[in-house]
Length: 209
Length: 264
Image (cartoon, each protein chain N blue to C red):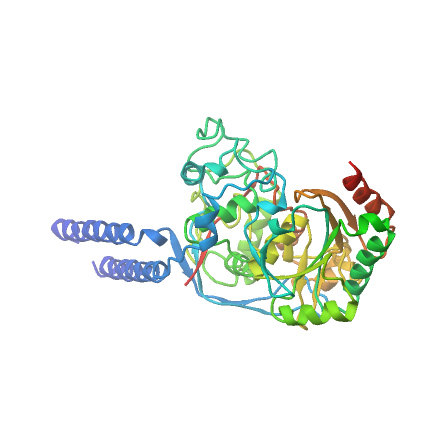
């Protein structure tokens, strides 16, 4: 009987502790606001459009936008962070090379969008400073900062992988994406400082079709 | 031990079960979750600048992977996630392809087997619908590092052997969720059934690094990997890292499911 009683007590203790752990879990039942909305919202965008996403982004010009607000003209999109010493200046430079290679009459019809990985340090003010230093025209260039979960989702949509290191730098893949006016991916250029002619051709095709 | 005593004990145990069943039902928001005490996750691969130790706060994790039946409940309540409605952006053509139809599991997918052929986006949407979230790599790996009797499975050769046995044997149909042994935390099936989505799968590993540090890819797949890996005998972890790094968020794969987590 002794051993039996002991087992019995042990079982009781286990049950009680299991239940108390359970209770801990159910205290917080937060329902994310995004999902409650997402199931009712019907977007006018196509099945493959990135503009279906409902995440909110802050621009360096203190506006709040969704990606859908970028619609209407092709966009050249890249992810970066302002304190990046190595790759990002090259990516931004690649975007500028693409811009410069476009025929002047087409240039104004294409948008360039940079989205930061660094949700903590790249505030809209920091992004505004970056725009000034790099002379990025407001009419065509959009600089965005989002919440980390939204950055993760956008990266997933663009096929961009990234990882923050111990120094607060981000290792990331270097991908330049062309979205058509409806937010669908039509072309991706992978790597740094490469040949931009194909990307330029894709953009011109979008505008002349 | 006298027979009447046995009866008494049996009666008490029955009462307990009934009472605890009631309590479980009452806490339905988190039924089927356990608390993982947290700790420190040491990433398997690191370059000299990588974070060496990732602190993990205590959190709740589903005891079982999400089953076909549970996912059916989700798509029933959220028609936009049904097979014929889902947007291509969020799930590739294989989405739920082992089901018989939008709202029918059919013979190829048992109700109590883990749901597979689900994308990261759909897994994330399911978790949000439940008021939960997907676990992070750090949370998942920390929990999965536990053996059956201790939280540090890496010091348990028996645990490692059992793991490898799974990774080296082909999958033939999916068993039902919960058939395997629980680990130290009371969690089932982290190994041995399906691979699982984590929220930050696309930060687990970077290939084609921004700073020209493209060595990771080579380090993973070639023998040189052992030099930068923390524990060279943990071959199963190599496999998981390789698998995660090959995923895209819209992929729906036959042996990839998920489970949910929640803040404490």
